[in-house]
Length: 264
Image 1 (cartoon, rainbow, N blue to C red):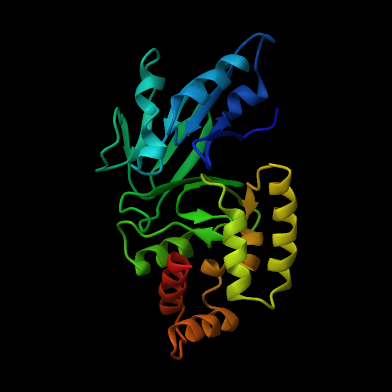
Image 2: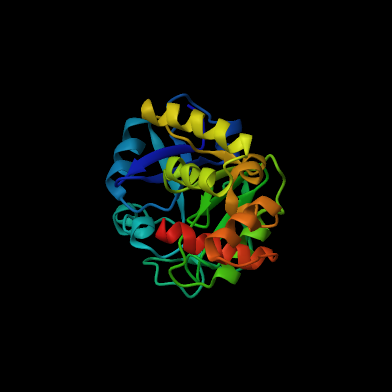
């Protein structure tokens, strides 16, 4: 079984299970439960069922932000086992035991994470980075980004820029299956981008087979995600055509195409 594992929830959410390094290296007896951390458990039922079926033991809950589809399963998961709950400081998350701020470092059974504050989708949004993997909630999606429910376009643009500074081979574990619609919008923004066309064809094939399209990589996002390509002339030109004015600034381009996507 390959980790991280995506557990589907609701209509298009993914709840991620992460194996700690220490248990991956030396599990002990074959019957010993695999220890896992749970990311953004909006619904406890599929998680509890999966853990029981696969003999896994939860050791922590990691939360990116306070929306119900990321937190509503916490109470049930903690009902029989006292779990540490990590999440953003000053956030209405139930049972929060470890409030986190930008650049904090945490260790989950030997797995190290750096916290990156990414306001925009919500003001309290954080992401969890460990070399090779980013658990980014609703900030960065495959070929897209989150809606702005609380933050400003500039905040989200700056948050995405921070994530874009990570290594190109970083695998992106977001929490919604939005890739197909995001790529269909990306084609409208950049109809002459061959990387987008190729990726769209592959994602259509995967979704036709009801297969997951995540994780993606930061390298793929740089080639195909319009919200990470606001500095590109083609994306600026598309934003200008939509807005009916000349656009030459990446932050303004982001603001326009985010509004465009919202009304698309």
